[in-house]
Length: 422
Image (cartoon, rainbow, N blue to C red; front, side, top):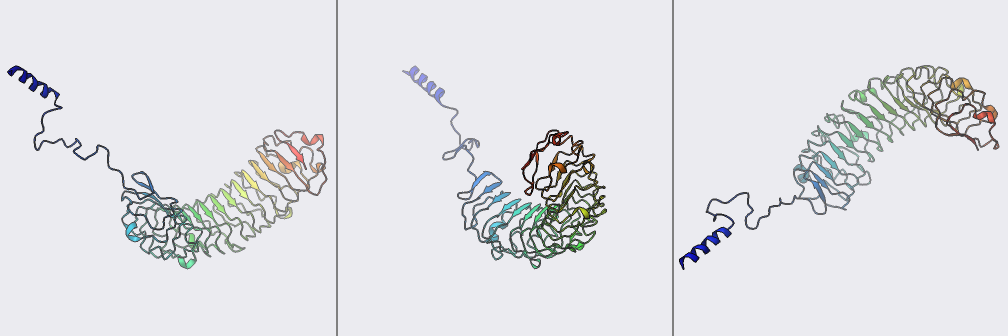
C-alpha cells in the first residue's frame, strides 16, 4: 500500500502551480486578493470628458457651478457654453499647470471674477472669456494678469471695456502675449503698456478717434493692426504715427471716416485695407512710402478720376491686388503696376475703356467691370490685346443702357474669358 500513496503524493505535487508561498516572499507584481491588473480610472468631473490625462472638456453641459474633481495634471480646461457666474479662487488656485482656459459664453461678471482669480495660473498661454454675462465686463482688475507671463492669446471681445477699465500695467507683464482681441468694446484710445511680443492687435468696433504714437511705442513687434469700424477722422492717424511699427504687415481701417490715405506708413506694409471711408484724393506721393504693398483696397470711397494722380501707383511694383470698386471713377487709372493679378472696378461710372491704361498688364488674371456705364462702342480697338492671362469670367453690366448683343470684334484677343451684356 505504500507505493500507491507515494504516486498520489507525486501527482499532487505536479498539479500544483508552483512552490507553496512562504511568508514574506509575495510577488509585488502579482495582483493580490481584491486587486485588478488594470490601472485605476482617471479622475474626471461628472458628465465631462477627459480624453487625455491633461485635458478636461466640460463644454455645453449647462453647468452652474465650477466643477470639482478636476485633476491637478490638467493643462487644457474647456468650460465654454455653460451657465457659470463666478470663478472660485480656491478651485482655480490648485490648477497651476493650466495652459488653456476656455470660459467663452458663460454668465461671468466682474463681480464673479476675483482680483486674484488667475494669480496662480502662471503657465496660462490661452484664455477665452468673451461672451459673458451679456457682455458686461467693464474692467480688468489691476494685477489680475500680472503673473501670466506665459500667456500667448487673450480674447476680451464683445464686452464693455472702457479706457478706465484698463491701465498701463494691465498687459505690460504679459511678456509672451502674441494675440490680443479687444474688439467690440467701448475704448476711445489704444491701450497703454502693450508688450513688445504682440503680433496681432484687434481693436475693431470700438470708439477710437485718434491713435497716439506713445500708445504703440512698446508694441513694435506688431504685424497685424485691426482698427475697422472706429471713429477715426481726418486727424485720426497723424502722419508717421505708425512708422515705428517696422514689421507691420497688414493694416485694417475699414469703415472709418478717413479722408485720405494715412501718410508715412511703415515701409514693409503688405496689405492696406481702407474701404468704406471718405478718401476723395490720391496724390502722387500718398503711397510712395510703402513700395512693398501687395494688396490695396480703396473700395467704396469717394475717388474721382480727376483726383487720382496719374503717378499715384508708380512706386507699387509689388502690388498684386487693387480694389477700386464703388467709387466715382469715369475712366481707368493710369500708371497701374504691371504685376497686377486682380483689378476690381465694378460699381463706378466708367464710360470708356482704352488700351493705354491696360498696357503691360500681361499678368492680370481678374478684371471686374460690372455695374458701370459702358456701351459696346465705348471699348477701344486693341483694349484686350495684352491681357493674355485673364482667367476670370466677368460681365459688363449697365442698368441704364438697353440690352445689345456684342459686336464680333469685341471678342478679338480675349483669351479664356467670356464677356456678357445684361
